[in-house]
Length: 248
Image 1 (cartoon, helix red, strand yellow):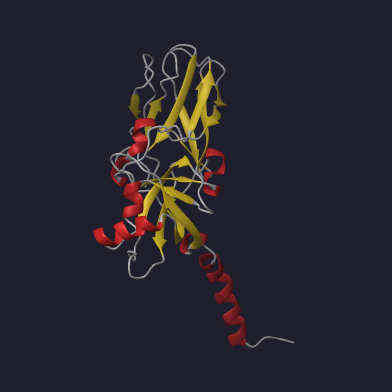
Image 2 (image 1 turned 180 degrees about the vertical axis):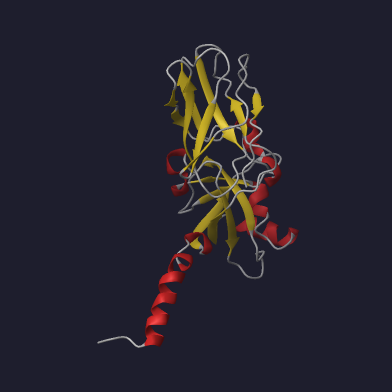
């Protein structure tokens, strides 16, 4: 049976629109969320992503951070951003909270174990937030959204590093909605890139790195990003270096 012109046109429109309709970032997933306690409402510097002290606030997110369970994805989910909305109409803000995954955490069938600051942002006002905390765990819906960190991408050298001999690095301020899938180091003399190991969370390491400047590149989605400057030869454990590279 042949299709009429109108039916053919309609089928073409459906085919063209199908990718947009299936963009999972446009849809919310139902789940549950709870929170943990801290003295100042921010995150914890001991989060399993390896962000350290930076993980307490995560740039402009101002402590709106969370541990995640299934979204952890063996550490690939570290630094990813989400919009989370609770479902008690008289208490919950319609926009919910925008937060960053900085830790691995489990609750009562929850995807998010949120910092006090993040959980409070679920409420429509101060009193509503206080009421939500009495629930302890609430039904939510969430979706992944692009991160909007302030400033350039940063390389933070973990305190466990030693110059020379061992380099461990965590990449900060990666904007957008894609994971950091891999990190590689340029091997001068060998004239090739060599992979760093994801040792845990967002921390990548390399035994016996080359002496002198260190040039790293990292893969975001399927695209390789090369910073405009190298890590200096006199790099120090605990130092943070600006890559002069900004993602949008």
